[in-house]
Image (cartoon, rainbow, N blue to C red; front, side, top):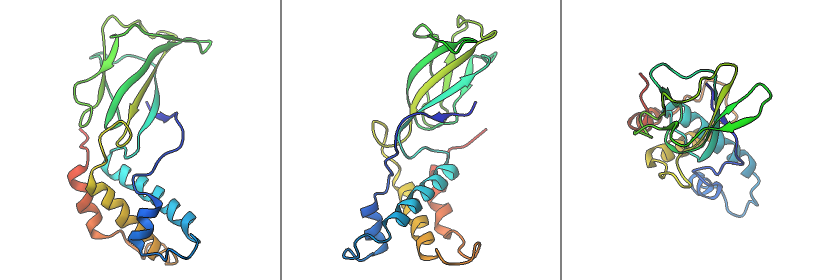
Length: 189
């Protein structure tokens, strides 16, 4: 089950103007390097999300299941999870029929061990699939992004900006990056 982001553009947790100040770029240069800095912010956010296993921007995600687990627990690879938007059955023709409320619900821990709880009364998925949509991520309606992960984005963006012309592999990530991410890293069992 791979979550697919289904909503619009992402608002980065570190703004371009904030990063320009951090990089001490000349405010009178007309933003000649704004496109580069914006791309570096997005890449750094993706890197920090991957390392921490946390979403740093809010979004809506869709997942498909071809069978219910025997124990009724579907672990979600997203954190933090904010809400269940939709749960339904998809037939062979692609028509989605929503499930009755309560047959699929969110588990108790939406940050460290997010999961779906499937009621034993949920219909069998023989020749069908389950479609589940959830909202997840820091920012927006969710909790604010942890300050140390924001700082990790700033550090990584600055590192890449300063070493943008260097040979690959010469600009190793700053040692502080792992130290910033480690306390916020979501564990996997």
